[in-house]
Structure formats: structure tokens, C-alpha cells
Amino acid sequence: MKQVATDSRKKRPGRAPAPVEAPGGGAPAIVIRAAERRDVVQVTALDAQVTGLPKPEHWMELYRRQRSVGGAPAGIFLVASPATDPERVLGFIIGEIRAWEFGSDPCGWVYALSVRPEARERGVGEALLKAIAEAFRRAGMGKMRTMVARDAILPMQFFRGEGLMAGPYIQLEKDL
Image (cartoon, rainbow, N blue to C red; front, top):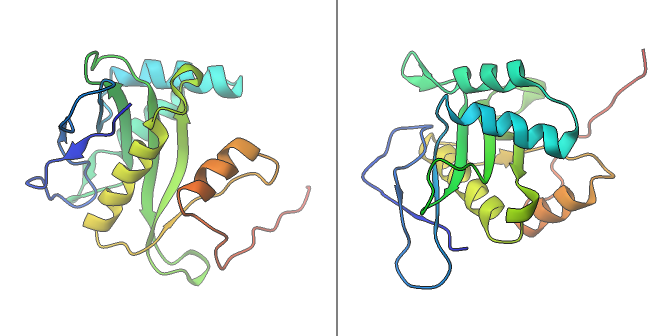
């Protein structure tokens, strides 16, 4: 699947660019766009399929957080759809700009990325990650971070393959 080109005329910080199909033939293009309320049902179902945990309230709250607050979005929630079927969600990515935790400069955080199992290895995850990275760049961020469970081989391989590597912080925890 081809990724989409983006329309550089839309330069709102933190917002996804308007999707435009990439030129050329071959497999159908995917379109990356800001999630809409109607997408939350499919996002919830996809997450439950992958994790085994239905969390509809969680996903609706994340959808609400993408709305602009005082001119800046509290979160970025994007979905990927086939250009030929824009109502169908193939995958999603959610992140936000966080600042100053643990002495860190402001940066973009990706905290959810999922692609339908039958749509994997077709460029959907890469297109979503590229789109959110561009939204972070437009908002002035120079870094993007995420966390991956040490034993989560597939996500680890994906993020490493996309150029993410160990950062300067180590997560610590204690059973309570």
C-alpha cells in the first residue's frame, strides 16, 4: 500500500495535514486523517481485537483530547483508511506534546499505535508514524518518544525499523 502525500498548505501546529493521494499506480493508497467521532467505534474494536481488553471510554476520552484547547490541541489522534473506503479504519495513532517531565525538553509522545492484523506490512503503520511525526515537527518539536514493553518484539522491531532508539531515560517501577 502506498502512503499518502500531504498537503503543505495546511500548517496548523499539532494538526494532521489534509490527506492527498500519492501519484502513481499500483496498490490503493491510504489516507491519513484526524480521527472523527464515528471512528472511535472501530478504534475500540481494533484495540480490543489486539489487546483483548475493550476500553470504549478510554478511546472516547482520547478522541475528545484531540480537540483544540486555547489554540493548541491537547492530543493528536489520527486514523488510516483505504483511499477507496474512507469510512474503514485500518489503523490509528495517538500522541501528544509533553513538556518538562523528569527534566525533559518538550517533545512529541506516541502512546498508542495499532494496525489491523490483516493490514500489517502494507505501510499503514509507517504512514501513521510519519504523519504524527510531521504534526510534531510543525508544532516545533525536535524529538519524538514512545515506550515499548521489553518483551513486545513486534512493536520493538517496528519502532526500531522506523529509526527510534533507546533514549536518555530509564523507566523504573516497584510492585505495590
